[in-house]
Image (cartoon, rainbow, N blue to C red; front, top):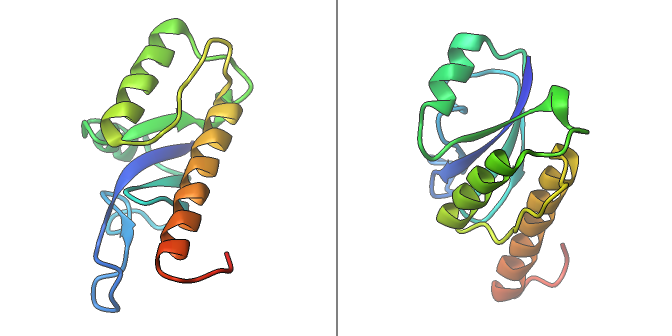
Length: 127
């Protein structure tokens, strides 16, 4: 199965302590990220059901099934996602009818916006 997870960032960004996705970097092999200020979107391919269940058991991890991206989120799921994003400090509001694809795009855009703000704050003008 392939999932996209939203997990906190760990690490200071130094050579001996790189920024990486919590729970995933040290246990799973096939993953790619979209880096955000405090969280990462992590696409994991080929994750076992046991590893998936272990990962989503953490209260600060969220999963989006990549097999259901074109399906609109149910009202219950939308409320859960909004609660998670608010608690994680991710500035994305999930409205009625949003699909998994639109949700992931909005989160990635919020992360990219945060990256631009960090670079501008550091005095870097190119992104």
